[in-house]
Structures are given as structure tokens and as C-alpha cells.
Image (cartoon, rainbow, N blue to C red; front, side, top):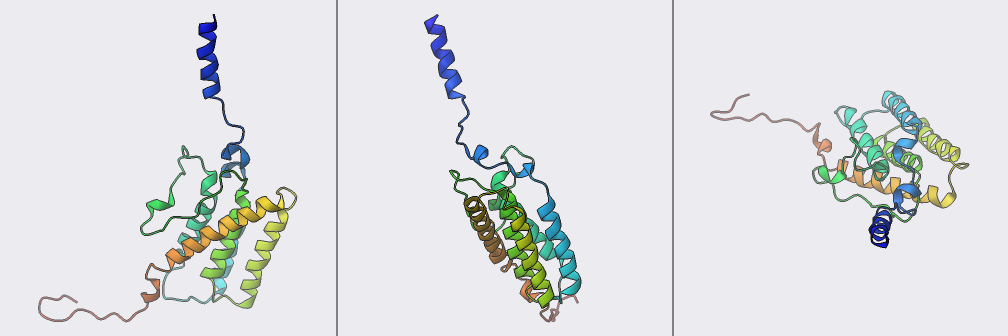
Length: 195
């Protein structure tokens, strides 16, 4: 009987879930509503209608990079088995994104809020003063709405993570060549060149 119980005990202990695991410290990103993202996307629509374009190109660039920053700001809260799991290192020339401290708790909506605030300030740098105030107001209102649900250190850690991710994504976005989108085009000339 002892011989049967020992392997059973070893197996049960080896499969025991760690109570201090990262997934238990931080709720999965999917456990939160999309309200923070919805509010920021609505803000972007307003900013796009009132901000002069910095370059002669589509606003889709702004959606692309802010969407990527939003996703990466909550990425550690997405289980690897998820169909939505997409590591940042799969993107060309994007250097490693910041890592979370797996011994600490994170609040993904706070991370997302900080990332979207930074990206909107950066992508809409030519916005009028009202647009800039709207960005600041939305960030503050969302952050205050979490004060009852999240302790200060968890919120600050999450904000810093989201900010670092957004800074890295924005730095990478600045290397995509958009600054040359309005350069004068010189068609090729000479024998065998088609215009």
C-alpha cells in the first residue's frame, strides 16, 4: 500500500499549481472590459477630424501603431495558448519590448490607458490645445476610475509598463520612413526607363 501511495503523492505534488504564479497575481487581460480601449478609439476619431495632418499620408498609420501599442501593453496578460497570442519579436526590427516582473501584480487596463495616452500625445502632436487637453483629461479620468479597484503600487507599476511599451513602439514607428512620404518624386529617365 505504501508503494502505491508514494508515487500518487509525488504526482499530485508535482502537478500542484503554484499559488504565487504570475497568472494568479495578475488577472488575465480578457477578464476586463474593452471600455478603456473603446474610449481611446473614440478619442482618436475626434482627434483625426480636428488635427492637421503632419504628413501627406493616411491616418491608418496612427491606428496601426496605437493598436499595436495597445495590444502589447496587455500582452503579458494574454495566455500563450490564446489564439490572440502574438509576440512583438515577430515584427521586423522591433527591438525587445520591456518585460514584466512576474513576481508582481499588474492591472492591464491601467497599462493600456498609459500606453494609449502616450501614443495619442505622440501621434497627434500637432493637435490644437483643446485636443491635447482632451487627451490629458481622458487619461486622468480613466486612471481615477481605477482608484477604488487597484492599489497605488500596482497601478503605478502597470502605468510604467504601458508607458515603456508605448515609447518603444513609437520609437519603432518613427523608423518606418513616413517622413519621406511627401518627398518630390523624380521619375526615372534614360533609355529603357518607363514613365
